[in-house]
Every structure is written in C-alpha cells, then in structure tokens.
Image (cartoon, rainbow, N blue to C red; front, side):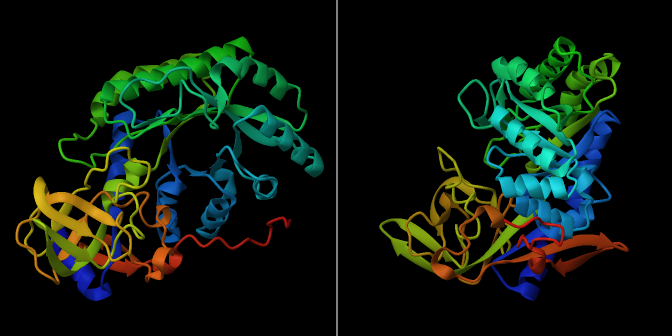
Length: 421
C-alpha cells in the first residue's frame, strides 16, 4: 500500500520529493504515551523537521517545542504555536535572539553558560521583568551506545556538572532571572535500551541532587532522549516497553521526592518521532558502466539529503534503507552498484556498493528514514539545482490524502513583535 502511494506521489508531483507520513508520526507519539503513561510530556525538537504544516499538525499532540534559533522561534510562531510552549536551547544564541525570546514570552530559555545567564539577566533588567531560565547540564558521564556523546569531554553545550554548584549560586544572585529547572541532552542516536535507561537515571540523579543541595523546587525537568532509529543494515530498533520498564520507577521517584515532585517532566524527541515517517524519492536518469561498477545517476542527491550521503558528521559512510519502487526490491550491501546524484562532485553519493538488482532509467528509488535532518540539513543551493517538494500524506475518511506543503518550509520572517537590531 505504501509503495503504491509513493508511486502515485511521484507521478503527481515529480521527483525528487520528500514524502512524510503523518499517520506514522502520530502513531509514534501514541507509542511513547503508552510506554511512559502520564509521567512525561513530549517536547518536539523543531530542528529535526521544521516544516510549518507539520508543526501545525503536532500542536494537538505534543506539549512543547524545542527551538534552537531565532528563526525556529519565528517559524513555530507562524505555525500557530503559543511561545509559552517553547524551550529555547543552543550554546550560541545572539543578543537579538535572546531579546526575540524575551519579547515573545518564550516559555523557558535554556542557559548553557554562566556568561549567558548574565546576559539574560541584563535583558531581563532592560524589560523590567525576570526571564524564565532552565540550566542545561553537561554530565560527567554518558553510557556507551550513543552515536554522538556530548558528555565527559569539553563541549560548548551546557554547564559542566562539576561547575554546576558555582553557576547555581550565581544564578540565584541575579535578580532578573526566574529559575525554572534543569535540562540534560547528553547524546544522540542510541539504540541500546539499557544505555538509554541508564542515561535517564543519571539525569534524574543530577536533577535531584542539585535540587537538594541548593534547596530548589524546579518547575521543569527536561530529559534529552537520544532515541535512535535503525538507519543501517543489522541495526535493531529500540524497545520502548523495555526502556519504560527500567525508567518509569526513576520518573516516579522524582514525582515522590519533595524537591522535584512539582516539576513537569519533559521528554525531548525529534528524530525518533519523524525520522522513519519520511521518504526521499529520486528517479534514475541514466546508467553508466565504469571499471566493473554500475553507476545509477539520479535526479537528486546530497544537495537535498546530505545525511543519506554520509556527509553529515558520519565517520563511516553507511547506506540508508533504499528500495526500488518499480521492482519492490530493497537494496542490500556487497553489490556493485553506486547511486550517485547529479552534482559535479565526487562526494555526491546516496548509496555505495549496493545490490538493487536490475534497475532501468526512469525507475524511482525511495530512501527511507528521511523525515528528520533531510532537506533543511542539506546544502540546498550547492550547484543551483531546483529544490525538492515536500508532500504530507495523511489518512482521512479511510483514504490517504496527499498535500503539497513545500511553501510551508522554514523561511523565517520576523513577526511584528520582533525587536530590531
């Protein structure tokens, strides 16, 4: 059924295009709710996919948005979200962005350094109003199994755990800050259930111990999930039920502790909600044989999907799941086909050493796990090819409905309340 809809989308809108399955996103949210019960709210990380149409649909289903720039603040506001629902993170917020967040009544601003706290205090003084802040903590440790770890090493992200007491004392002395709680995001793309649960337990320890030491009553405690999705061969998806069985007692302890029981617990999710619900479609425009390899030259490539090319922080370039819609065959490794884009650069590759079987010019390939960090994480203007369209598919009255949401893409226009300069 899904392949038929993808073929129809390609016929209607042409390729290359991104197709997002809203039903899949909503089911993933429901799975998280079932696993953790009412213990955790969900904060969607806008950077994973900032399309306005998607953000509008998520309004009814998640409590918060995690925004990482002034542009994302604007895009989310244009999508109809109340800025009170925003959590503004990032180590390099400019004064203009901080003022934008302050003027827009952003829910909480996540401070990632003592200097940023002091800057926020000055902006609060200018406005004559205390700004709500959450402190991001960089833990001393993170369990094994995370694709990218932001703990145990020098990092621009957050306040080192060993410096937290000093920064908390400084925060308490700043009159125009309103302490709201703590945030930890220690690692990404983890597929190990036990490691995720161990990380949650470590976050809870940091939140609880800091609250007791400084006699605090936090209102928000934000857990960066780091939930991974299986991009590559032989990777297994996480088991939410197993993670919840290990972690729910940890969350319950926070609710029972006098220091943290009033805090709303939030789970920050981005890739895990939208990644597997997205597909990138591209057409084979010609084939070429060269020295024992068959090159399938595509009408799309790394300018549209940098992550699938392996050039978005990957140490070892591995293939995303790729299927030929015409034959239904899923690409396997250890083949002699190279899937290359139409850019004039040797790094424009969407599949290396694959075996897709017989493929002809005009066949359509579907690159899975493309709903997160796809279009907006790519060098779209490189070599000046036409950008891909974005299509949202959702079941209505028992049938799939396709909608072109390309114009809802993330072009940030300052709202009327945005401060200038």
